[in-house]
Image (cartoon, rainbow, N blue to C red; front, side, top):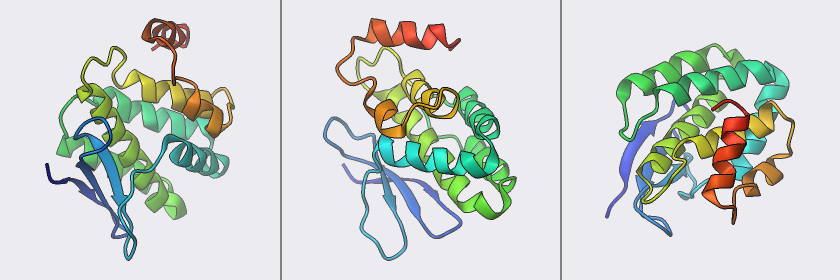
Length: 162
């Protein structure tokens, strides 16, 4: 299966869905002049933490939740426009905010489409919550769910109110 366009970002980067290790919902980022790659959770969790150090943890988390609440299994142009509007509020960090929120949006769509996934997009929210609200290091949050039963992760999400 070929890659499917998610969004062309204001800095010339391109986000696409394509075949990965498990399914055809892998998110690929291609920056201008660079090779496409699938950004790992630890990378964009780290960038989120850095962005939040300038913009405020609650602002970044609250904006993420706006995207989370609008995310379903299908790519939606209205949500992409909303992300662009949210990102504009980050002023000098607008390009980074747009990229990160769009990567997270695409990742949540992928989770909603993953076969037999019991948690769907909530698994991304758990990681973002750990990094931005609880102060968990991005590398730890990125690995937190690996190998854990879905029931345990569901309980972790419920304990945090989502």
